[in-house]
Image (tube, rainbow, N blue to C red; front, side, top):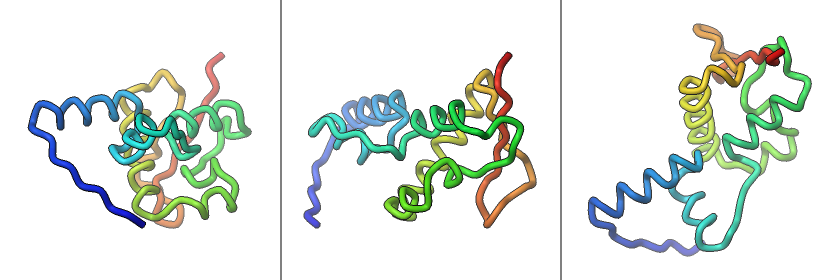
Length: 119
């Protein structure tokens, strides 16, 4: 796999970070999205969509539970961690989504969440 490196001054670095955060993507995903119009199923928006349309209402779940075993096997450990962190941050900042972090509870060392559909 090729590795590309480029330098950004503080202004452009901040712009890139803010743009990626606004799309709820990590920097690498955002650059792929902008350069190649590539999106991935491993995004905060996709996790939320799957929770809201799936059978998670009133149940405990972890982020990997939202995906099939085959799908989850396609994400590397580092990106899985970034997705989990971004998801946690987003649902914490947006309690109106009905997704809640269950404090002091883990399943296989993963954060646990619940979802309550809005009436």
